[in-house]
Amino acid sequence: MKKISLVLLIVAFGSSITAQNTKGALNEETIQRLRDSFKKTPENIALMNAVTHNDIKKLADSRANDGKVNHYFTNTVETKAITNQKSSGRCWLYTGLNTIRPLVQDKYNIEEFEFSQTYSFFWDQLEKANLFMEIALSTAHLPIDNRKVTWLFKNPIGDGGQWTTFADIVKKYGLVPKQAMPDSYQSEKTAMMRRMISRKLRKDGLRLRELALSRMADEKKQEVKLEMLEEIYRMLVLTLGEPPESFVWQYETKDGDLSLPKTYTPKEFYKELIGIDLDEYVMFMNDPTRDYNKLHEVEFDRNLVEGANWKYINLPNDKIKEFAKRSLLDNRAMYFSCDVGKQMDKDYGTLDVNNYDYNKLFGVQFNMSKKERMLTFESGSTHGMSLAGVNILPGGSVDKWLLENSWGKKTGHNGYLTMTDQWFDEYMFRLIIHKKYIDEDVLKILEQEAELLPPWDPVFAPEQ
Image (cartoon, rainbow, N blue to C red; front, side):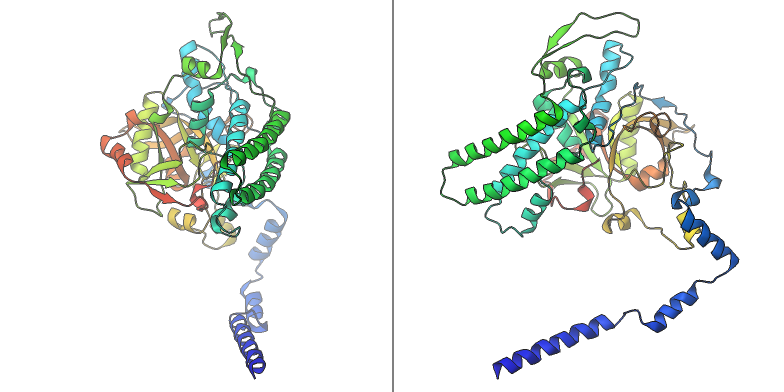
């Protein structure tokens, strides 16, 4: 009797699912309606022929907007030698280093100068591997399908990052000039290296979960972990080269004067050339999905075990732009991140909401608010650049901003992108500004207890 009831229950439950799936399904009548809805007018046929045989972005390129945005600015931070991250997700490192690079050029009267991104990247990858292992140990009591554990093993290591990861690496390991640790093939094309290290970390992570729950002494567990890190270190040396403990630096000024060679450690180099406290910078976000004037923190979003989680103040754009303007007028570039792929004309070098008109091309409406785009995964921060200029109109208003990119000189306008003020409002997500340009009432927000947010929130994807 029980077996019969169970069978009936399964049949009934299955019927319910089938009925629900049938409701709203596409039947012959609805399919015919959809066919009829496309009117085979000469215009529609011509448009179909054009779209099926051509680049959609080219077809949506707005002719009416051509030439409306120029590349002239009233105030810029002077930079030289556009950098190129190539096929890597290290834009956050390039952006951070490009932000402080003008300080060196001004201080030493140097025409061109570049920090080694590979040196900082080496330590970032080692620290991220160590952090992964520690989180694997600390979350071993959670089931493998727990969302936090799933996130960890899905993202064991990456080459992306943001300002906090940049600042912590520089504070701990210092900096070196590019000639002290040049790029390698793998640093310029990080995909395979990242894949292999991820594979090794996933294997090690499972072993560490077992050890964490065993009766093995904590000291022995750490010894096993260090042996695993030795293997990661070996992989990094083989792919990136070994980071120097000291090096000799010599430079030539714009006037042709040659300095005496001097030996530095990476920390000494940073202290002498830059010497600024990176903790004096504040991260701002414009996130309309959350309340403004609040402090937020993202769990596990760091690269050092002892480092700081990503922490930011959420502010309206008008306040963020006010502080940014002050910084640029004082000749200080800033770390800037955005959804760079939206409405970007790579050839001309502009970011303008009117560059492409997809509405008219397809005859449908795509318009969404920034909040709606963020909530539905349509938009999020994808790339970091250095905010290096502003154009101030008579009367004090701003119509455009200058971004120093890291995609080489052939992309954009000689390596730069000109961003309209309206595009800033729609697609800017994060900006890092020194405290001296920020109002006291806004700085007091840092005293709040930060709301802890999960690392898998789509708003907080690292810049690539």
